[in-house]
Image 1 (cartoon, rainbow, N blue to C red):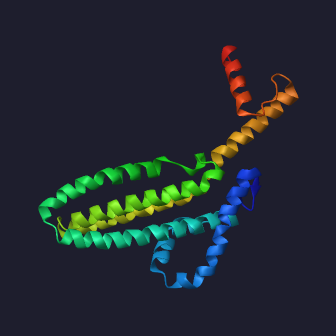
Image 2 (spheres, rainbow, N blue to C red):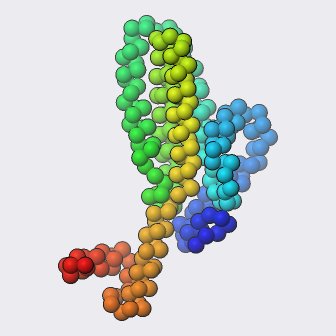
Image 3 (cartoon, one colour):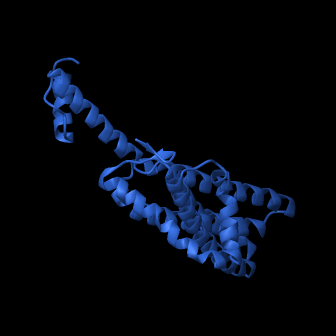
Length: 231
């Protein structure tokens, strides 16, 4: 069903989602510190393509928690980028090519997985673990990407450095936007599965053709029987 302009899945899973989204209420007590927190405003700006949309209260709270997640990742990325800049600036330029090649692996693996996985397939009871996973995955991806940019900036002319900076910014913006949009699908696949089971159970009870389908085991039996009958 729809509640407050968004999905309300109900049951234990819906309760988990509501409790997770309500954590954003606690973070509002830190508004004073956010005013002087540059990483928060950077994360908020990168999340603006989604925050500007008309969202329900629950959806807004989920995005607010995502902003906190990305704020932390941006802070880590800034600290490690400064360390990387220091190390790269004292390194021989001939060795930077090897560094870029070595960083391609974590950037490709985490970047590919970032756009491949979806919150829609995550059960709401596993939401906390999924958010923690994406936080560290995005941290590894952004640090790898920024370190590659810094290494290349020490090799290529300044004109190409500007081009690489734009590309890096757009990659991070698209990754954060994708994460925000995808996070609004939390538990959707599980909700659709429960809805399908409910509808099929009602069909079986009303028509009397098949026994009521009230579990995944019964659903499998129904599909297997249909396959044997050529359905």
